[in-house]
Image (cartoon, rainbow, N blue to C red):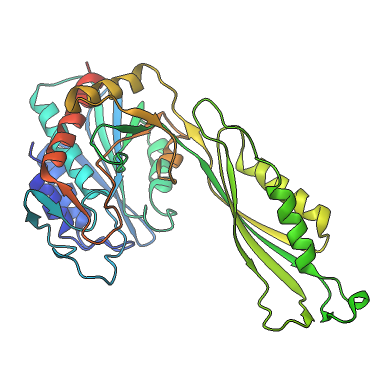
Length: 372
């Protein structure tokens, strides 16, 4: 059980393309029960999730991850996407680095840690099948269940593939928030030759977008780069040049740091659009708030474990997209560390077997230090 390879292969052979489970969580549950974990299956809607725990009173460390994967795509794989095949010391399969490999490494690391003798405290795993999908019936609902049952940990580590090139080079300690907006501006349709009879919504929309993008949102902070606004679409649907359209629509995304909240940015967008277009609608979706786990005793133990196992002192980073850590941050300190992510979501996703075993050693040392 201290070698992550057999479990990683077994998980890769489950075609758990989100939202399907394809037996992946049963494979994982069987491995955890063999180590003495108590496993609770939590199904919400069509999503399979599980919570596993071992130990009792004392510090509580949780590992979080997901068994669902993105589709393999239409291109041919050199080694099949769900074969768990090894070629020249490299393990291939959809989810190898994102993130079935990390789950297997954590189970192996936990097995090695437990072999070292009984320690006070609790180890748990929060595993969802809804990270690559809408993220509605997964981690969010499991966390609510954990809170209702007194199972919120003191610290959580998410096994996302955080390293760009070399195992040990990057530890994620936060993520930017993300807000999406769809802006629809209404006008009065008519012939371009009679401008006094029309109200051009395109002109109003362009002026609103110019105001939104005229200046940087902020200059960044101690842990984050500057927040960014990107206009991702302007759509009128007009196929002729002599017609002023009745409406115009745009979409934008803001990735923001801890100086802002989603609600405050939503209010700013609506107020700005309203100055240029009284007849308008702004639909807002806040994908997640920004968060950061600042360096301290618990995080420092993770950094030290990574350095000891890999010889690399990881950079503390908050870049990239979002992850389920944004939900966990509402309940406890959280960080992210996993494999090299260079091939995630690509054809021939893969991980060197040596990296898989090294990650298991990282996780063992993290547990050793956490419960020291």
